[in-house]
Image (cartoon, rainbow, N blue to C red; front, side, top):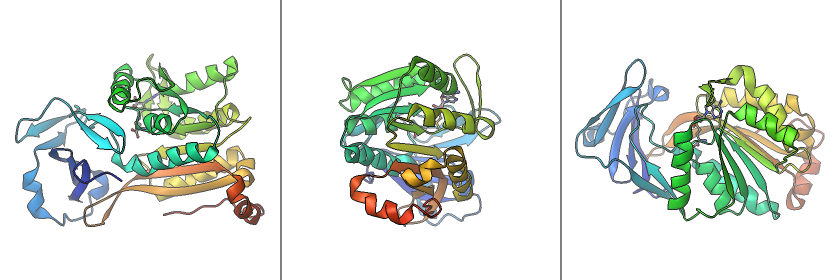
Length: 306
Ligand SMILES: C[S@@+](CC[C@H](N)C(=O)[O-])C[C@H]1O[C@@H](n2cnc3c(N)ncnc32)[C@H](O)[C@@H]1O
C-alpha cells in the first residue's frame, strides 16, 4: 500500500498511535487503542512531535524543527501533510484500500464515469478516481480543505484532470444536482458523525445518512456503477448497520450487484490491526462476474466482513 518510508503505523497502545509520515514520526491519540498495550516501547521516545487533545482543539509538542508542510506519496499521488490544531494531518491512511478499490472500479467499468465525492476532505478519493480516468465532482463544506485538495491535485500531476471543486453542504448540493438534472455513475461518501456546511447547515450522521443515501441512489439511478460509504468512527457492527440501511433504501441493489461491509484498520509494522472505522461497498454486476451474480440473486446481500 504505502511505501514504508512514506507512511507506516509503527505501534499503538495506551490510547495512542505512533506513525511515520515521510521524514517524521508522530505520536497522536487513538481512542481505539485504549485497551491495547504498546508492543514496541523503545520506539515511542523517537517521536518528533506529540499531539495532546484539550477540550476543543489540541496542542503539538515538537521534539525537533518540523517543516510547516511536507508531502507523502502513495503511488502517483502526493498528499500535503501539515500538523493541524485538531491533530489531523491531511490524509486518513486507513482509506488506502478504498482508493485502490475506487481506481479498480473506474477501470473495470470500461466506460467514462462521473463520480460524486461527498465530504471529500483533502481529495485522496477524488485523486484516485481522477488518476484512473474518471470525471469527479468534489464536494466539501470547508473552503480551506478544498484548497488543500487542489494543491494535492497539482502535486499529483492532476491539475488538468476533469475535477469540479465545490465548497458546499453535501445534502444541499445533492438536492440541487437532482433538480438540475445532473446525474452520476458513482458516489463516494465519507461523512463525519457530526459536521456543518459552509452556512452553518447541520450534518448529523445518524439522523441524515438515510436521506442522503436515498438521494445519491436517485442521482445514480440511470447507470449506477458503484457506491462507497465509509465512516471513521464506526466498526464492523456499524458497517452492518450501514449495509442494512443501504439494502433497506434500495432492495434492488441486492440483486443488481455485490455489496460488502467491512471494518477499516491501520496495520502496524508487526501486522497488528488498529480499528479505524467501517466501509460499505456496492458495485454493479459486470459481465465477467455475471455467473457469481446469478448464484447470489436469490439469497441475501453478499456481506463479507473482514
Ligand atoms: C472524515 S473527513 C473525510 C475524509 C476523506 N474522505 C479522506 O479519506 O481523506 C470529513 C469531511 O467532511 C466535511 N464536512 C463536514 N460537514 C459537512 C457538510 N455538511 N457538507 C459537506 N462536507 C462536510 C469536513 O469539512 C471534512 O473535510
